[in-house]
Structures are given as C-alpha cells and as structure tokens.
View 1: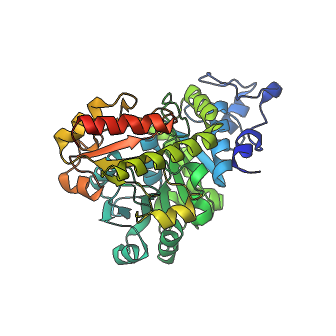
View 2: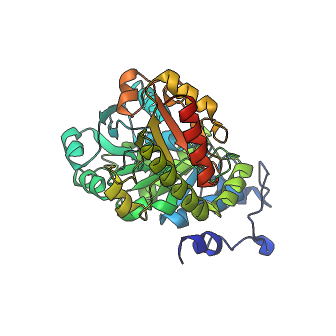
View 3: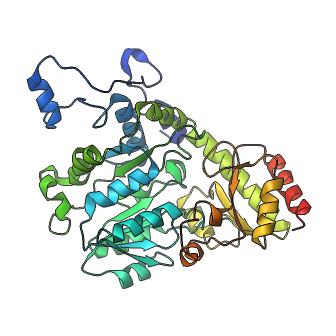
Length: 409
C-alpha cells in the first residue's frame, strides 16, 4: 500500500471491535479480571492485557500500533508529550558518566532538557552540524548515542540520516532522531539506518492543535549490549526488544508520563489525514518561501534552489521540503511589526496546525536559552518562524507581503 491508503487500510487501521471504523475511546483507569492470578500475570508482563491506564490502555495501544506500522518499527510507546518522548528515551538508555553527541540545531526545550541531564552527570557534546566527520571527532569511550532532529526546528538544517547512522554504528552507538517536523509522510528514518524515532505527535500527526502527545518507535536493529547500556541489563532477556521493554515496563511506569486515551484518539483521528495535509502544507510553504525570497527577504527554507538542504530534500523527503520556514526581518522591532500586522497567521507557539502559525522564537520558545545556544540553533532577535497551514497559498502570500510592506521591510 502507498502512504495514504495505509493510513486508512493498514493492518492496524481496520481491527477495531464491532466493526468500528474509528478506534473506541477507553476512558477506564483500571481493568477488571475474574481472578487475582490473571491480574498478577498482567502486572508482571507475563500475560497480555491492561491493568491500569498509566501502564497501558487499549486506545493508546491502537495509536502506538498505527504509528509503528507507518514507521516500520518493531514497537512503539506513546507518551504524554513530545518532550516526554525525548526525556524517556534518553533516561531509558543513559546513566551518570555517559555522553551524548547532539546537533546544536535543536528545539530550545530539548536543549534545556540536555542541560538538566548535565545535572545528573550525563554530558552532551554539541556540534554545529551533525555529520560523519563531526560524529567521529566527538566520539569518546563514554559516548552512548547520537541525537538529532531530522529537520531542525527552527534552523531547518537537514540531517543526512544514512550518513549519520553509518558513523554512529561504526562507533557502536545508536542514532536517535526526532522526526516531528519530517513526519512519517516525508521520511521514514528507520529505513535509512536510524535506530530510534521520536515524534511530538502534538504537531503534524494530530494536526489541529487539539492534543498534546508523543511517541517513541524502535527499529529493532540495534544490538542493545548491557555492557555499554547497563540501564538495560535487567531486560537483556528480551533481545532486540530490550529497549522497548524497559521503556514501557520501567521508565514509563515509574515516571508516569503516560498518554491520555482521549489524546490518543485525537492523534489517531488526525493521523488519517496526515498525507494530504502534509502535501498541501509543503506546497504552500515552498510558494510562500519563494514569494518572500522574490520580495528581497532573507528566507530559510530547505527546498529552495539555493538552500544547502535542497539535495537532501530531494533524496529523503519525496522531493518536498518542510512545513516550516523562517525569515529575518532586519531587527527585533521590525519582526514584531510584521507579526502584529498579519491577518491570517495566528500568533501561537505550536507547529503543524492546519492554520498558519507565527512567532518570534528568540523571546518565546528559546527564551530560556543562552545567546550562544540561540545562534547555534539559527535563532536571532529578528528571526520569524512560520508554521505554514493549509490556507490558500495566494492569501498567505498576500498577507505576508502586505505585512512586510506596511512594516516598511
């Protein structure tokens, strides 16, 4: 099946009770059994089933299965948010003294999380551009993983997944990617060599800005050696499922960052239109970026002809770009004027909505980061981030050009 057909007719999209075309919403906290012995087996993970919705829930499981099928993994674990997905993944693998190699072009919240991990004795080596050369140069005997966004938010730097995976594997470590901005429609990182894929499904997958959620997918190809990953030593019996087993049975249970069934339902509902939305969003983003460029604005969009990410867009993203673009207004004051003069773009901090959203990253999503961290992430005081929606492109272009003209840019 092709992508959009799989969304509606994949093996995990048609197996709902009583012939339902949508996944039923199970809002039960706990699940009843006929005997205590049955419940005990479920609690000890010796029997399939649900005991308590913090640990597992049928609606959440259906969402996990749908995402896993699209990504081509061996299993997925859904979380309360995208940041929970990132934090649970790293805490699942790492212990004090371990090190991470990460791109400096990360979302501000992720940079903040890595700063918190420093307090736990887990160090991150940030590199300006993640590739085979920088990975090899940064690897030490304490390095345990490489982490990057597939399309950096908001720097829009594009990761060469295959190259990064080969370099990470040569060092005996996994490549973990946040593919939120790429989505399974544009790219399937596991097929290109990545080992773990993370999504903030609050964004393009849910699609309407109505649910906070995240998910972690394991490709099942990395050999989880307990000598290098002592955190997994109690789960080595699970073989290739060791990462997933600890993530679900230990980290998820104990930290409690579970996804609510209602948000899982909304994520599943949004997932079914992901393909057609992403096509429209990427088409609109390219048209808007090109129009701004023709107007003399300094635009950053990976699918533009002069962009350093153009070739990778052709190779990795169906020839499409992304749903985000940024531009520089010349000054913070000018950026504020443009933003405040827009009619159709909502001033909001999300991305991936059906509506076009706009903000000033330096004073919002990167407000807690240092000036150096902002610059490494492509964020300056005059940087405007635009998450393009599904409106008519002509209306968006006119809106932005009018705002720029009225702000005298």
